Amino acid sequence: MKELRICLVNAGVRTLYSSLVSPPLGLLYIAAWLREKFNVKFIVINQKLDNISDDELVDRIITFQADIVGISAMTPSAWLLSALSIKIRKRCPDVLIVAGGAHVSGLGSSAIAGTEIDLAVKGEGELSFEMIVERYLAGSRYDDIPGLIIREGNGRVVTNKGMARLIEDLDTIPFPAYDLIDISKYWKVQSMLPVPRRKYISLFSSRGCPYGCIYCHNIFNKRYRTHSAGRIVDEIEWYIKTFKVDEIEFVDDIFNLDRKRLIEFSALIKKKNIKIKIAFPNGMRADIFKKEEVDALVDAGMYMTSLALESGSERIQALSGKGLNIQKFLENVAYIAGKGVFVNGFAMFGFPGETAEEMQMTIDTACSSKLHSISFFTVTPYPGSSLYDSQVRKYPEWRKPDLFREITSCHAMVNLSAESDDVLMYYQRKANRDFYFNSVRIGRLLRDYPRPFLMPLYIPELLKRTTKGLTIK
Ligand code: B12
Ligand code: SF4
Image 1 (cartoon, rainbow, N blue to C red):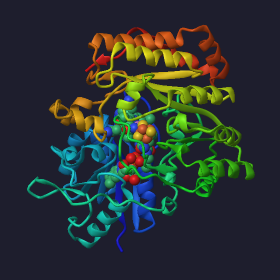
Image 2 (image 1 turned 90 degrees about the vertical axis):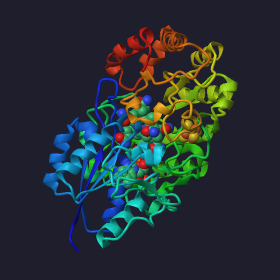
Image 3 (image 1 turned 30 degrees about the vertical axis):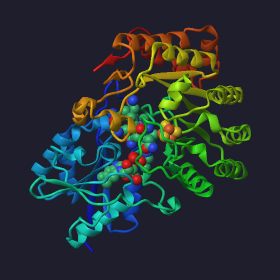
Image 4 (image 1 turned 60 degrees about the vertical axis):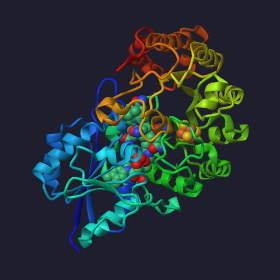
């Protein structure tokens, strides 16, 4: 069988405001899955990491002689899809262009309007991409692949019935194809964790989350599926051996939902005497933690975690679907921080109808907590969230990807709160001032931040957040 050539691209532009980069795990999973089944050669290009232009990207696709190009994009990078796919089509007319990732998963068929993308996968990618390759090799049609979005010859976009098939047993997926990227390049930039320059690897050990937060995605379905504890530990051992990493960064949505697995995982790390630092830049739900689970993770090597508060108001907790038990949050943050773990928080202002009093409740809760640091974001209705679906009728312009262009936590594209833009921005600034300009907090930060000598790097950002706040696009 002829060797197939697939180029996988993580679309993005690295800017001052959008500088975080981490390994494109979705693409690495897809490559690992496909190369077990087909005679296929891959290249993986992270446009955001290398900040390469579309033209240079197309040069590389041509040099590689790709048969298929697979592009992944989140919504803030989705504006790139049109120009990039048009350029690929112009210079490589026969290449099959396939898209996927958070943006396509959220927006569906509208995501490929105005592009030259042939096929798009909404949701989990491995099984759909496998079916695409099968049909590509057989020269047959794609119209029996569940949920697939297809651009027909006449430019019309249709969506097949059904939903992308899910992998039931996640352990059947091989380890992500980290050999296809130069992981050391990622160690020189900052990932989601607020600590730059670490010899880490990202690990995604579960898919799906049963909670219904209105601002969150639904890429992997609401049903929670996990890699087994044994598989995660095998994966970690392989990373240590192959890439000499000393840290694992879990980017799950909700790692601690399966308590039994958490305990088993921690016990295995101990039993095998694996020396590794463990960080959770997101993906822990604070109010469901039990003390023994925290103890087990700390024993296994957890040194940093982020825990989302989102709001200090019970009304907003209910309205946002998060339904966090705020008291439990405060208790668990204190317990985890007391164990010597650096605890970062997340909160948001600007939920639909949120009042100034409710914003102040969030500030008060954050300030009364034992969090070491916290990011105060504004609510952004990303495609794929139920908040987007419920509001988009009022704001039809949101369908244009340009509106979300490189939007970050420093910008708000909309103000859904009950207050004016000025009041919303005032509370974001005030939150940063009240939280950080506190001698006890600064003392704890200096004592517990894992790389104190790097802290000055964050001073310009902090000053910006405390004085300028966000801007409404
Ligand atoms: C790590 C991470 C990041 C990393 C980058 C990761 C990367 N891939 O480059 C960093 C920290 C840089 C980041 C930044 C941001 N992120 Co982020 N991030 C994540 C997180 C936590 C994990 C991503 C991951 O590795 N998932 C695991 C892999 C296996 O999943 P996957 O990438 O989706 O891939 C699967 C499918 O999507 C599909 N697929 C993916 N690509 C392709 C391509 C093809 C061709 C096909 C067929 C299929 C396919 O198949 C894959 C395997 O099943 C997700 C949450 C989540 N659960 O995914 C949020 C998430 C993706 N991020 C999100 C957001 C909002 C952001 C920011 C805007 C945050 C901010 N305010 O600044 C920025 C945007 C950056 C930008 N300019 O685009 C949203 C995206 C919403 C949306 N509509 O785009 C998510 C879903 C979080 C959420 N709760 O809603 N993020
Ligand atoms: S925000 Fe967290 S708890 Fe809520 S749905 Fe998303 S992953 Fe689940």
